[in-house]
Length: 114
Length: 111
Image (cartoon, rainbow over all chains, first blue to last red):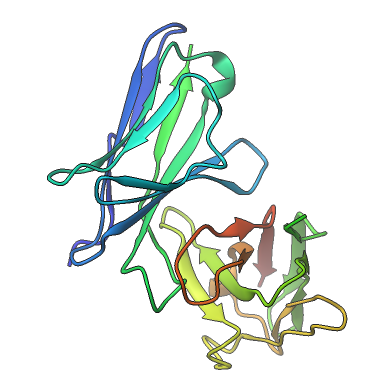
């Protein structure tokens, strides 16, 4: 089991461009979480998805950010018209769901906005 | 409000000294508490959870509901314990759902 996979590991975008971050959960896991870590801060919850459903998006900024977890393929976190303040590490985690609160984390994607 | 506070950004100790990383939480219900660790160039991984009441790599943590604390302790620190440590809270006991993280404490164990 390769664990949670994220790509790319590093992403550089210019202001105004779009950023797409991908996350493949662990085998058998149907729950995916996205977190953002700004410099010198802890991880902040953004969104919680199950296959084809958004369960909790209380941590997502209201504009420019969206997330999906389609029936087939990885979960995608999409940031439109990036700004310098979006520069951060974005972590994905997965879990089997019911019966446990433990989450397994990916290596993260470091987004730099120039 | 749901909040996790780790008051120390950096904790530096010598090898063999006792270690205590502090964690306080604010939550009105019955949370589930975790300690996650991130070693250099590795991903975040679970160290221990309060419901399992086990000792991992010599670390223990006791949930004190009266003081709303979940401090991480080890009697004799080792150099390989140097890492970032994050305390986290799950409002949904064993039901999945988001984790609320503290700001993290960097532990540095000197030889």
